Length: 451
Image 1 (tube, rainbow, N blue to C red):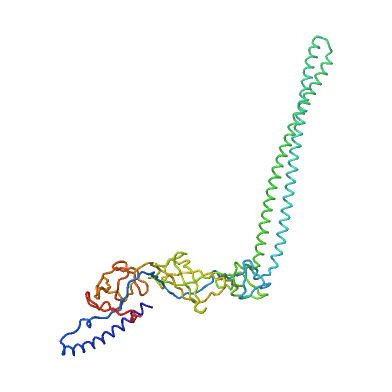
Image 2 (cartoon, helix red, strand yellow; image 1 turned 90 degrees about the vertical axis):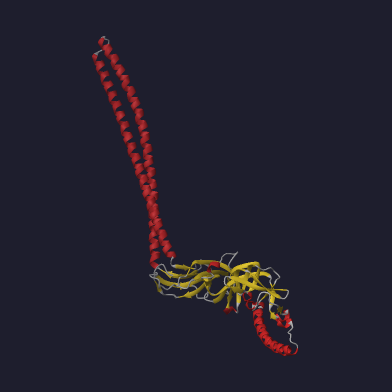
C-alpha cells in the first residue's frame, strides 16, 4: 500500500512541480525585471524518497483452482443379478466396508451347496485312503512276521537234514561192517531224503513270504498314492468352494473407505449386469472427503519455482462460496511435466477437511509461495532506472542526487531484491528517478506529504 502511495504521490508531485515551475517562471520573470536574480532554493525539484529497509520478500502466484474429493469410487456389479435392497442414499455418510447394496443371485447359493457336498466327498475319500494305507502297512508287517517264521522253519529243517545226513553216513559204515542190516540203511536214507525235502520246502516258504511282503509294500505305495490323489481332490474341491464363496461376496457392494454417497443409480428390484464398457453406469458413487484435493495450473514461467512438502510450497486456498474463508496447506504433488496444450504445470494441494466445509466441485483461488527472501534489501520497481544493460537508482545525499549502479535479484510483485550497490538506511528516490541527473539538487518531500 505504501509503495502504491509512493507512486501515486510521485505523480501528484510531478504535476505539482510542473504547475509550480510554471508559476516560478512567471515569478522569476517578474523578479528578474525588478531584481535581476533568482534564489537557488527555488530551482530545486521536490522528490518522493524513502529509506532502504531490510524485509522479507515473498513471491507468490495466485491461480483459479478446483476442489475435488481425495478419492471418488464408482461401484459397479461384478455379477448379474437382481437388486435385493439399497441401504444408502445420496448424501449419506458411510464407513469402510459398510454394506451399500445387496444383490440376489439364487443360482450361486445352489452352486455353493454343490461345492460343499464335493468337499465333503473329497474329505471322505481322504479318510478312506488313510484307512487303505493303514491296512497295507499292517499287511507289510504281517508278511515280515511270516518271513521270520518261515526262516525259523528253514533253520529247523536244515538241522533235521544235517542230523539224518550224519545218521545215514553212520548206518552206511555199520552196514559195510555187517553190524546192521541193509534194511536199516534204506530206512535211514529215506528219512534223510525226507529231511532234505522239508528243508527245500521251508526255503520255498521263506521265498513265498518275501514275495507276499513285497506285494504288501507295493500296496502301501499304491495306498499312499491314492491318499495323495484324495488330498489333491480335496484341495481342488476346497478351492472351487472358495471361488463360489468369493462370487457370493460380490453380491454385497461395500464402501471402499469412509466417505459420502454422491450418486445412486439403482432401486430395489433392478436387474443389473457386469460392466461391459467405459460407459457403464455405477450403482453408487462414494467420495472420500476427510481430505480434499485442490487442483490448479501454474503457468510455465512460474512452474520451475513450485516446491512441495512441509518445508516449501506453502499455499493458501480462498473459497469464494464460503465467504472468502481461507485454508492453509502445502503443495503435495505436481505432474512434473507441463501440459502441452496450455503450457501449465498441474499442481495439487491436499487440505484436511474434518468438518466437511470443502465440497468437491467448489471453485477457489489458490496462492502458492514460490520463493522467499529474508532480511533482503528491496526497492519498488518505480525507483529503478535502466540504461541499456545497467540498472541504477537515485540516492539523496546532502540534498543532491547520486546515481548508484545496483545489481538486482529476484522480482517480487512490485518490488525487486537488491543484491548489491545499496546499504540499509540510504535515502532513495521512489518515483521519477529517470528524470533526475547526477549531482542535481533536490528537496525531499516531508513524510506527511508522502503518506
